[in-house]
Length: 189
Image (cartoon, rainbow, N blue to C red; front, side):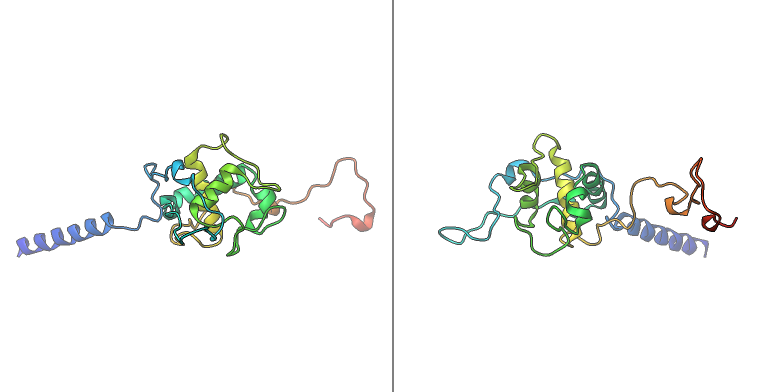
């Protein structure tokens, strides 16, 4: 009887290890994910209209679209490079919205990459030489995730930056020094 218990617990241990080994890759923090080559973006189409036969360039596959770490790094870069200043957190403002389903210069990974690197007329600056290619691909994945064009399971459910333990809006307002308030405006306390 002890032998069968041993075999049973060994079997359960093997199954548990197998399940752990095949777990979800959603939160994989791998630094080995390879972005597509920037050379693949040289022939980027900004329209579905082509002269001649109806052959379109092959789409570029961006592995970062399925990696939560890459998308969260893209989000960090989006705010670090002040993309939110023009795109207003994806809702559009000075720059076009990034949360809708139609984009002027295309929503394919290679088209977004080209828009970031080359810039666009009437406001979008070129970031060529200012951002390394793998970071442009991370930005591309984050920008595409805003409108649901990436794997929804890859989008992180949390921010990866540190936050203060006391929320900013929970601090009690302080009265300015040397201020004179009328009795009616004073807070009871």
